Image 1 (cartoon, helix red, strand yellow):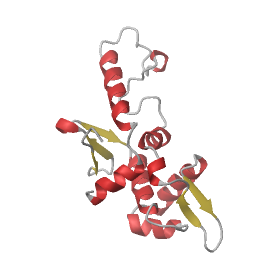
Image 2 (cartoon, rainbow, N blue to C red):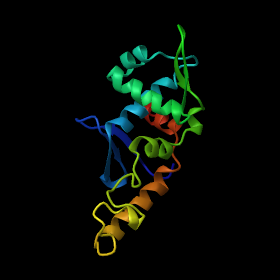
Image 3 (cartoon, rainbow, N blue to C red):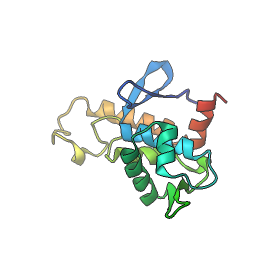
Image 4 (spheres, rainbow, N blue to C red):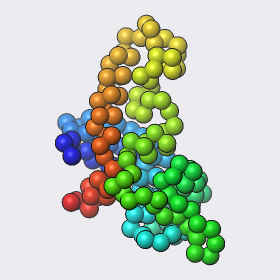
Length: 162
């Protein structure tokens, strides 16, 4: 990958992505926990139940279960019921784009900044007179250009130092 990214959790469990030159971006716990869960699920070739995954990841089981249900509905994981039930990745890690995970888990028009690229989505209905909107729209576009090429496999590789 052309850009040097680091994926870290800060003290409040928000996902902190550090780009080159120390530029930091923050995402919600949902996104951080989701990436963590997907990395751990990638290590298994059969379904993993929520209790076991919560133990491995040290994440709250109810919150993790909710995230996994969302991931199942969106096609990132498959869920299986019964005694040998649980969750497994529905695709290979190299086929799961990080940008898609961000879009599902952040559930907002603008992933990084409050300013959306669509002026009609302005939270304060002031897009036409806002002096900083063009700058934040530019930063959002640049961020998307970088992250769109990363996959879950890249995150796994970064974790292992490869």
